Picture (cartoon, rainbow, N blue to C red):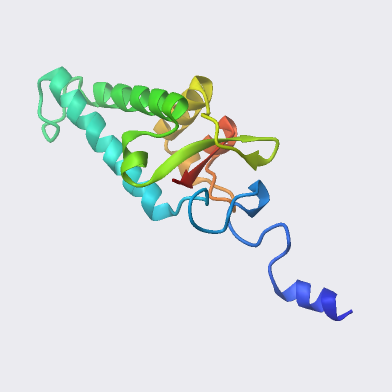
Length: 153
């Protein structure tokens, strides 16, 4: 009886920390990435895509207008899909000490997600809403659809 009362007040065995259900460590390498690092990585990638789009359009990033917005979005999508899918991390992820891991049968593993998973993630991140709807393992709808999780290196 005492054990059921104790378990009712504490976290369930299924959810003790983000990533527990996926078999990930609570902290350190391989643990689920924090929101701060993920947002910083996204901003770095967005800035890099903007700089590339500036070179391709011949317009400074801050000027916008013309085809800049479309070019910026296209570069961001391509960069995110290819790098996250095939290399396991975008430039922003690498600079922030993160990587994208594929999830298989409920547990994360170290393999690369693959190009299809990268395309799914990038497409949904580009739509923004799926990235801000997430579960208790800090996996947005884009990660759930692509069967990925962002973890610390």
